[in-house]
Image (cartoon, rainbow, N blue to C red):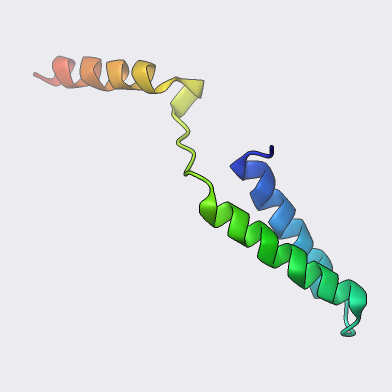
Amino acid sequence: MMNRKTMELLLENYQNINGRISIDCAEKQRFVKLIREVETRLKSMPREVIYPNGMTAIEYARQLAREANERL
């Protein structure tokens, strides 16, 4: 299964290809359908949270807590 970033890149490529096909033909309609499918899959995927420096959620939470404690 593809991750969200891969799906976003795939969607962008499909849109670029579709934009370059100037006549309405079976190939263009194929890309219209693929774009719709990828957009639907993207909307159904959970949002990916990316933390700084490749940290996990717990590592980032600890960093935030440490920074908050240092400000006190």
